[in-house]
Image (cartoon, rainbow, N blue to C red; front, side, top):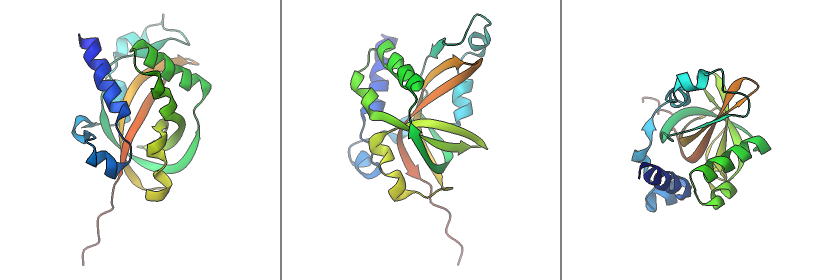
Length: 176
């Protein structure tokens, strides 16, 4: 039962409309995303399992998605998702028996900065289509993300977050 409800939640989170204004009109559940950092999301995975010397390159860790709102800096840089990351997301979709059309939503990843660390995050294409219109390089943004898990590569964990929505953080207006 728990797996089915997790699957349903993940599917709903990923299939919701992307554009901020239409998403609000159509019921994107912003409140389902708790304020966290990307580092906190990674920290929620069982460290003992991840540090297990039996875990070798190519091994994966899937688990709870921890829907989160993270504050990051937009860099304006994007690239096509690597084949390895695309395959990881495909494995995640298959593991949780989700609709394979989810893979079509994530074609590119964008670089964001959190506390000085660079993160390349796959972004739903309809969400990314608003980045250049609404944001400038160096601006703060709230991303609504889930963590799909990670794959051990070259002795380190490559964590994959999926971006479902964003809200530009407006800078405070100067006092008059």
